Image (cartoon, rainbow, N blue to C red; front, side, top):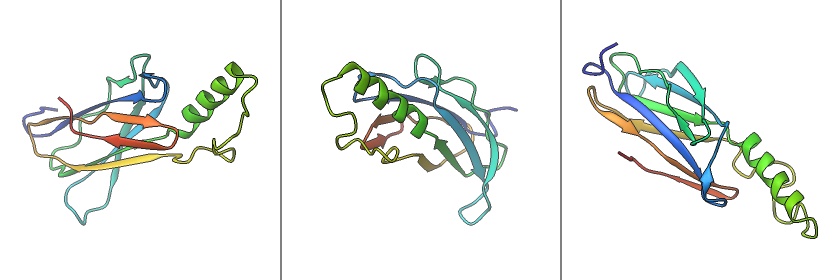
Length: 135
């Protein structure tokens, strides 16, 4: 599909608590053709060792809005366990959301126009996140 008639999307995740890319996070891409249209799943991927999803599908022609769904809970729980194991004397569950990640998933919705590329990085830590339009 030509990106002249569609938008293209890429993303990456940086774990700001560790200063490293977040590897193995599933990311799903959905699209809709207007603000009141239904969402349609387009496909997904998972972040690689560099925290990047290099193979997200191209949204279909007519897409006006894209949603990226990041399933961060397994990654955050795994990271918390590794940190607790590394700090044996520290309380393993102190303020760490022992019942699971504080934000188990992150959904980012944004408007797109045909022919444009949208790089949307996610900066993630156990108790917060931010996103922006990158380059």
